[in-house]
Image (tube, rainbow, N blue to C red; front, side, top):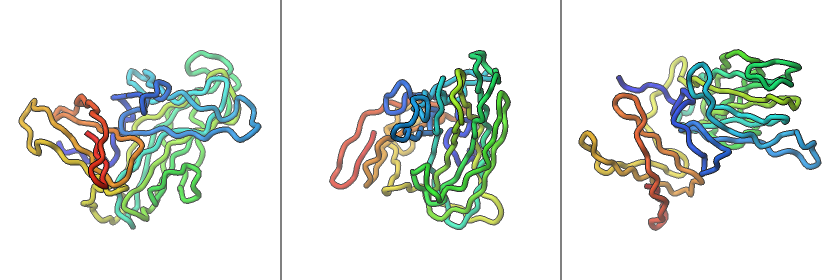
Length: 257
């Protein structure tokens, strides 16, 4: 069956990996972390850098964002191709634990957790941008809640954001995300362009591999991306193993293999 979802790893599940080899940033494949640093002279508990990790919830590995005894303004982002003028709807399930008790799911003297999802229709990478359309803040304490937002794309690439911003520090302060879905709504044009920022594209060697044959994927871009993450799906919908062979420079283009 052909894959129809627009997002990479919309489940926000496995595989998980250390983002840029940082073991405090264990991120679901296809996604990237973001967080806001504390303001100068802010209390020690305010806007800490979260620990991103995989957590088993409801028998499935789920993305967790956690700041015990502190708060954060942080989450995940993903960029993807779009068609300017198309309307898109993003939906994501979120859950939060906030409590003075360390027991999973406890709500003892809970803080507001302020979960939101957003779309930057210009494809920007600034989570504080006024261009982002955000959903209303939700407080899904110890339960899953589906958040939704719609926006009209203004460029050939859009950025989606998942965000949580608890008000008060708590002993237990964890946020979980799963099941993100992005779809065009109403009358829309179909995009045939898979080129990302910096004229980014992927080529395969060989182009038509035989079953079981190793494949070399070459990501080429005129832009020096800070991080390249490649996910491979097998025909049975499982994930293939990816070995990063590093980056080279070929005249004016950066190559990752």
